[in-house]
Length: 156
Image (cartoon, rainbow, N blue to C red; front, top):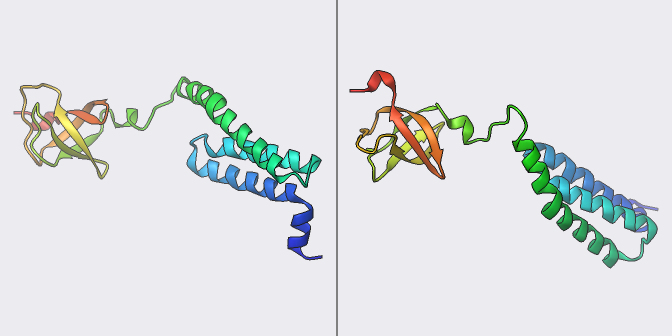
């Protein structure tokens, strides 16, 4: 008996392997999406143990469990994680970060480079104009716009 014959007789092993791969991928992504799909794959494995010939039921249960966990469990888990003491989102980590003005920044906008990534920007003080090449610091993130001011040693 070769491996393909064995897998054909033990479909649950395919579901279990899929759940394991999704679990490992979740460790790399930390999105809480792939782990929900892994839970669905585990449910599919459970159905495969009980009803190995009903592939459509296995897929249906795996899909339903994945969708339910994605829609109901994931938002709750994300909210709990975000409310934990010491949690800082990636945009929160930019507060106080240094960068460089790529173009002139005035109340109409401009562009800065933070950690090698370009951001649209506007000055903290709307009457201020920050020239290109000026080192800046991030005051806050407003949507996809960095609100910035020149570093203290570069103030006029």
